[in-house]
Length: 154
Image (cartoon, rainbow, N blue to C red; front, side):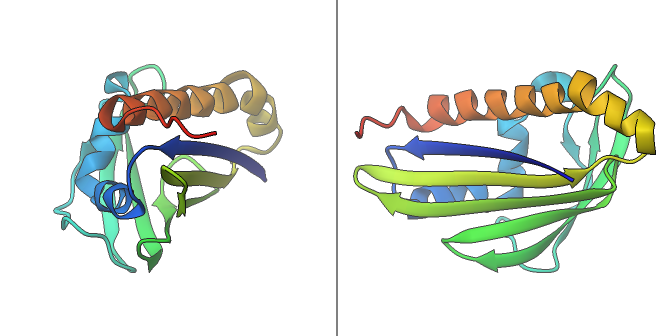
């Protein structure tokens, strides 16, 4: 099992951050264009536990794949969790945490994941999978700063 964590601080309130991130429709805004990210299911503006979201996405070589996540936990405006139900990973557990800090909000993204294909997956992880995930989360970090500004705290 692998873990990827990112912390980002923004000059907005917890409620502003929550309102943006808990709307499934906004995920396309913070996903790289080359991934061809497209939500296939009808989604509400606010997530809830038990919500299934179906996507089409092309993370590698333009190959389209189906991805379904379930929102398993929601405790607004503190955190929510999505888990893959259909997709490329054996396990995908993504936690999104929000907390107020002086001058803004601190967000923690934590993804715990397992790659299929045994030894082939272990070989692909450091060469393909991990760098691709890092690239996606780097893009997300920059895009969120473009949308909400750079935190100026200490």
